[in-house]
Length: 143
Image (cartoon, rainbow, N blue to C red; front, side, top):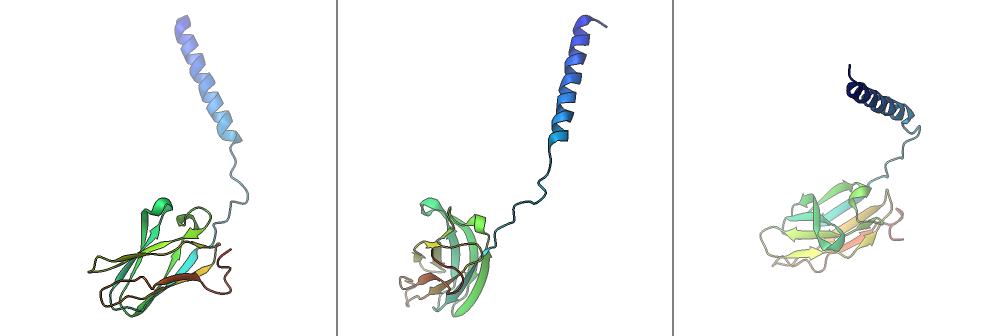
């Protein structure tokens, strides 16, 4: 074997040894961080139009579709706390199916495990400007 080949082989052995040493130092935490409890959103659609509800991200961009709720019915969805805006902020956009109207809620600050309620009121044209989003009493709600 030439000197160059011995140096390459030595370098490869050194790199492999460093990799094994680093892998041996890695430990999983004994107590992993608990996942925060989800926020529960209860929706009461008190209007005729079926609606789609979307989670809003920072800057007002539409995020995940949370659920659809038919007219004059209720629904419930659990939202993972990490899917809220930073600081536990929930804001939703509600779109009435078949009309050009959407409603954007004000922001609501929630803690893990809190419950919020969304009451959707729409007129005959699908305008939902009387709708409200609020925390349910006894669950922490707004800070």
